[in-house]
Image (cartoon, rainbow, N blue to C red; front, top):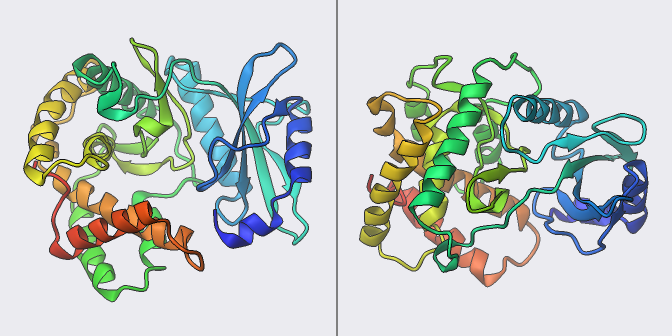
Length: 323
């Protein structure tokens, strides 16, 4: 979390947020990278997730638009951790911080299942990859009928916001050319729309049969192929494998992923040829996010190593896998 946000987030704000949704929370957050995430319990001893989003990250209208989309896909059969109303029947509650900024509180159901942590998980394999693809395809099928909102960004607005804050001119130049290439891709109802955008294992649980997806904070208008690229990207990002080993794995994974995806939705073969563009774009987005989050702070060694790897690929204009 950025230093400016850490300074104004207090136990009193957390207590007020919990009270508005009539839950009790564990003091240690589940996550604090872009939002503060806490596990919560209701009177019925049911598990929930309480999230607090700072106004420097999202406006209230943006959070409301995210939750409306989440509500829509949940009501239409998607396996997601849906939003819940506060005691005042609001999906978003606004809490003022001491400096005049705001935190926006939201409550969600707790996703059934567990996080699949790479190769060491007994679930890591074809059945899991197929379920992953099916869940993504279902969201893409549903989003085609969702009304347009002005309160969620396009991929270009999101990426430009990250790139514009970069200090490295070389990365900025590479990003500009890459984004120009992506912008030449055709936009159609069956290939582009509002979507999650970040369906990696940290944003869903798996129960041996299906995924329950959460954290729609990055929901934006993007090309559907982007979501499939993210599966390949995050499946190999933290592995110790060589590029060749990562590529071999990704090619096999894509076959199974696509099988699951096509139960729900189909993309023309030509879209899969654009995967390297989106893999490279994620390197730039992740690199920029790390630079922003640790600005003015010491970057931990693991993030420093990752940042150096990202930078190397960006400058060489290489994707994480050759697919």
